Image 1 (spheres, helix red, strand yellow):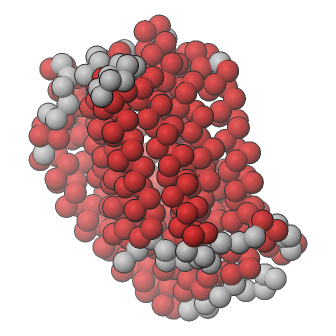
Image 2 (tube, one colour):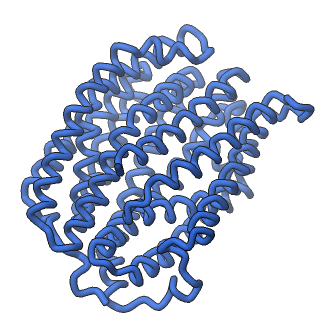
Image 3 (cartoon, rainbow, N blue to C red):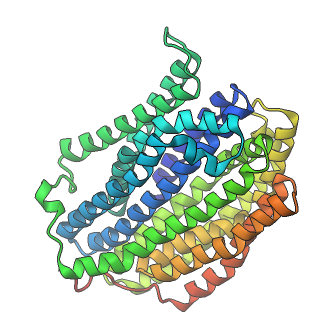
Amino acid sequence: MIAVPVAAQALLNTVTNMVDTMMIGTLGETAIAGVGLANKVFFVFNLLIFGIASGSSVLSAQFWGNHDLKNIRKVLGLSLILGLAGSLFFVLPGFLIPKTVMRIFTDSPASSGTGAAYLRLVCLSYPFTAVTNIYVAVMRSMGRVKTPVVTSMIAIFVNILLNYTLIFGHFGAPALGVTGAAIATFTARIVEMASIFIYVYGWKTELAARFSEFFGYSSSLLKEYIRTSLPVIGNEFMWGLGVTMYSLAYGRMGDTAVAAITISQTIQDMIMVFFQGVAAAATVILGNELGAGRLKEAEEDASRLLWLQIAMSLLLAAFCILTRNLLVGIYDVSETVFREAALCMVVYGLFLPFKMTNLVTIVGILRSGGDTRFCLLLDSGSVWLIGVPLSFLGALVLKLPIHLVFAMTLTEDAVKFFVAWWRYTRKKWLKNLAAGIR
């Protein structure tokens, strides 16, 4: 009941990104490379917001298990403040100096110029994305998972319709190219946030709080929020910066390599949604059980969820490898880009069981009990000490093809798998965080 709607929502968003990529891809490899690199700014921003949302969902899930609605609203208010403040650090440079930002990712003048035109407009959607994602995370922690799917469907319809209209100039509109894609995304984010508010306040849900109820934090709540949530925020942000460094390495390999990895990663995101659903279900189920003091039930359910995702990961790894040509073939690209993207899919399939087990173990299980500082060290350390050095070694020193550089970066997931599994078996995550908070 929890995992399927979460996976469905993530799948809808990923399909939209795929449609965006396909539409923009018709404008040429430079367009797809420029927009793909510009979206790396959103990737890092989204990880910051995901960290804030994940941290809030850890606490709100345990408060929901403890029937503490007052503190759920305060956690929501605190997270909204952090999310909106954090979005400004991305909106200001993206709007004021987009070309400077793009030069961080690529030294190609054509890709940089295209990406800057897209970034200047699309960055204005970031605050709306922050508010939406934080509300959705808290709603999920309370088991409210169907409404976000509906609001995503509305936003996706708006996005695709405006993409078709503004990128190519249909229905009498001017053909704006990548600028049209940015306007479509900006509009869709506003519609999505408005839809969430209409549901929360129109249906008078548990989150329909007065403005004053978002404030007034007790010392015990602030202490637990800082102890639990800030490591999650730091984890996602540092991990996101590390993964963005991969893009810096890829960006120095030329537009063909960037186009190939952009296409393959869009497909990979679609495969990943199933495990995002399992991880979200683990956070909610285990958080509710831990908050209610049912530690034994939480331990048993964690084991079931892990074995479920391992079986799923093996099946989808085989699917990813066997259907790679069919999946990549939906894009209208050159033979070279097609070949490299297909090889990247093979690499992804080989590492998928490691990568997805880490997702469910770290995001779903360890975080649900507040073991967030260890997750910060493990996630950030593996990316910065293993993935980033190997990506630059392969791209700039050894000058390997993109699929081999991609394989080198994914070795950090294999190392992380064994450490995360060891930590899971130590059972330090089995904690009731809601007890004792006023």
